[in-house]
Length: 292
Image 1: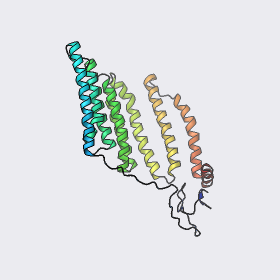
Image 2: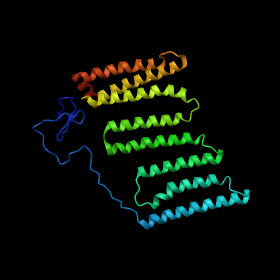
Image 3: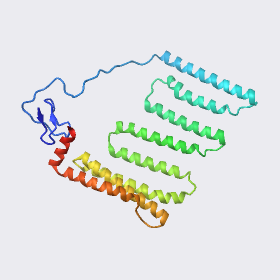
Image 4: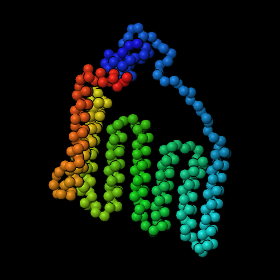
């Protein structure tokens, strides 16, 4: 059994690099094993695509059920109330259920992201129509629609990460999406100018600090330790900026209250992490201790 010369982690005979710090292992006494990984290889099971006839028949049966239930509800409403009133709500709910459950059976190729996108669009349309049927306006539905849109942006960013595989474009994507969502939400508020004065400095500070943090982390050799330190410093700065902005909007003067508590905790922690990353011996000793 050998150990890593950098961090002291125990190494197996087939390791070419340290699994913790990535240092190359040079040992003339090692030899190749048949297994090259620390985990077993599980067989990939191909279940095969369902029969098109069975898929279409399932969609047709679900569609017939949704249509029958909708017809029954509308008929009862027409007989009892001599019109179409309350039955629009369950009928609209059945339409949403049909689009989410039955409609995918009529498509040849489905993916999670595509179905998730369709469901988000259907849910937004459903909420908007439901609000209009109940009250004749879109007062509360627009807030729900923005929340669903924000959730879709988060999920879409995860799928973009698999395709782009670069941190900077994804970071810009999330920042711009957040700014757009904020401005859309601000358009619903009554005191737009006051809220804009309060939120604009925070948004600009967040964008600037995020970009600076990205370039610092990208240019550093010790990624994990630097990332933790930069995130702590960035979080502290954002807390100070938010606290100062709120204090200025209320008291017309710059001051700090709760953000000082955050700074008292994060600054010593950041200094400790920086000191550990600068000392190779301390870094190796702590890494070895944590690994065990």
